[in-house]
Image (tube, rainbow, N blue to C red; front, side, top):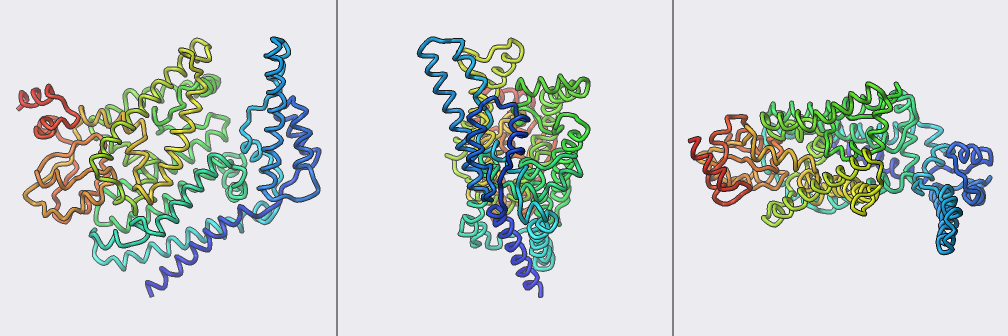
Length: 544
């Protein structure tokens, strides 16, 4: 009976996922001449070419699918910009500066697929936009119901509470098998569409229009869709966490915490702020993870919002330079990475089935240290450029355009690393790829944790039976068993204090503690040169 319920749940989930995917290919999109004129006027475009090209491409009595519609809009924008760019080059060659400068007003700086999305969102017709509640029930509804029916019976099937290595590397979903690769392809495809081709998923956005309107008063964007989907997935997978780790109070509280901060602080509060004409802001998102906090456009928007905007600016600075290091001193980086952060929350819920795939090799540890600190340096340099631009009004520093370095970071780190790789690669490289290799805030937190914190994971070597569960389930690639066998404290800067190593230990060898700094650092680690210099060792011996 239990297995039958799980099979039914799996079938319902796959049906919901299939319908969700299929909605991309449904609906029709075409503009009337009046709709096009209204849109051009609203955007303030001065180019006559874009209007003519859009008339030919998308103003039609013929209904087009989203792919035809998108292609028409993208080609129209590219044709218009190419025409005026050629004129600019011509006048530049002639040294006709007046005419060259005049042509820039006709260049359209909207991203092609973003422009296509804006138009498609206004004119879509078909089953999804006309039956949003039913479409939501057939996609999100079936998916949620199916997932819960599959997950909840595990309470009975698992038997007594506890964790064991029950064939985790024999399952195609958790050992990079065909199910894992399917999940990988789906997740990567989703992030590519979200970041670079939002017009192609406009039907997905229609699904959550009603929810967005009830919270913010506005129709949904692709980012609202992402936020809602993020919270939905985390909630469903949190149920799985509650069942799997029901014997461990730390995991129950930690899962509840990340769920609360994601839903309330990262999703609801920012959308409610928009309803009251305030800036969209996630109060828990600290710099440098919130890498565009000091960008000119953001600072201008905050300062234009009077006292409330000033409060956000002051809060963001205090959070970064005071609250973050103080909290890390007392509780380690776990207070943020495992209890507050949305990235960590998704990694600990959706990503939990893949945590054992994190590489434990020495090479990966070396790459981790280089890459994550390189990202931190990148974001700090970029922020310096941004602040210089804000205060001095220049558009470049040392011959480098501020906008260029911001665009590079946004594309390579903000989109590709944090999104496509950071989440899409869960089923292949483990659930903390972004947190381990790319998050600049994790690098900052880790720096403080390694050298000035009371947090450590203590070990009892005499009790360790070398089962390897702790190392297997460490999402940060730390060989926990090696520390446990020697009875050494774990104070690695990459450790996010998730506590799973302690939860899966059958002997209670590992404990997360916030003790005095004295005795926290292992002399053997110091002598091996693991992140600590000789002076630290000397000071440590003096304290003893």
